[in-house]
Length: 406
Image (cartoon, rainbow, N blue to C red):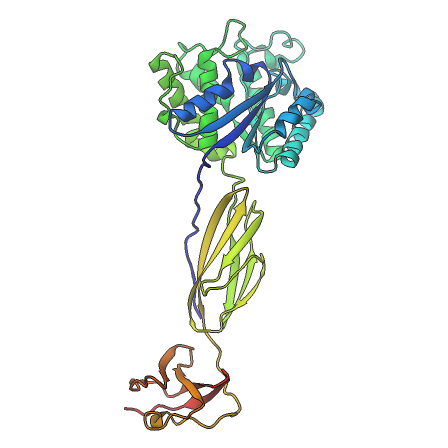
């Protein structure tokens, strides 16, 4: 018996139009981030339908208590829902973050999965203020500098994403890369907190890359920025996001086809191991199929068969393929029909006999004849074959056949 394993076939495609909802506050609303993301996608001939639900200074708690937020969430079948916390709350000490922010992050993601079950949650990892959070500096020294505040934001946004199986959109990390490599680009407005046009462009390039999984250098829309500045920002998004998509969770929750199987003689036993799939479909390669995740399938014939599993979720499909060899186990039946003398068939064909097949002991078809055509017997080195006779009424009988050494 031989079993062959073929390569997993994984195809990820962007739907005709992805729908993205941004839930946040003024950081999201500034320069209309959602509109900019759609515009950047359009410049690459992709269609993103982006919308936002924002409230100035809103915390995750406020959105978790907002009927308007839930109404917006229920208004369409979203593909991505982005959550942005109030600019300071994820940077606070863990004891405060764990009681005032994390529970509502979890509550909002649970609501997303309940109301929009096909949507992928995404956390909008924001940036440290230009000179840190001076208002809270005395109470929590890490906030006294940009570096300290940005580090706390990264730590706690990462925790929110990891806890909820969400993507982490590393906008703040792209900002940090730009700050470290080109200090001439001003990402902030005069308040040292909100994003300038360049800052929002960096965020939009980040989200474009997360959602489309495309190199942001494919974007041709500079959004009225200096072309050199826009190109530098796009390259930063490539370096931080596109080159490390898996680090931000992208693809980790895609539908993944998978099954294990073994074959004994002609009977396949299979078990579903797909991930994030709502349903599966098997094509057994012999004209038969099944939607049962785990089961058995009998081939009843000797051949190689390609088994394909299709795993479905929310309009997406992934496939994986295995090839098996089915080998019929032969047994010698008690004779219920006359003995077939194969050498005499050319001269005398019994009236109730439909066909005769010779099989090797491994189950391979060696020779076949019916009343319309009786080929010459080929030479064989086998000491024994199995003769299977099919009679009227589809009854079968088998007998040992010892070939002559022609």
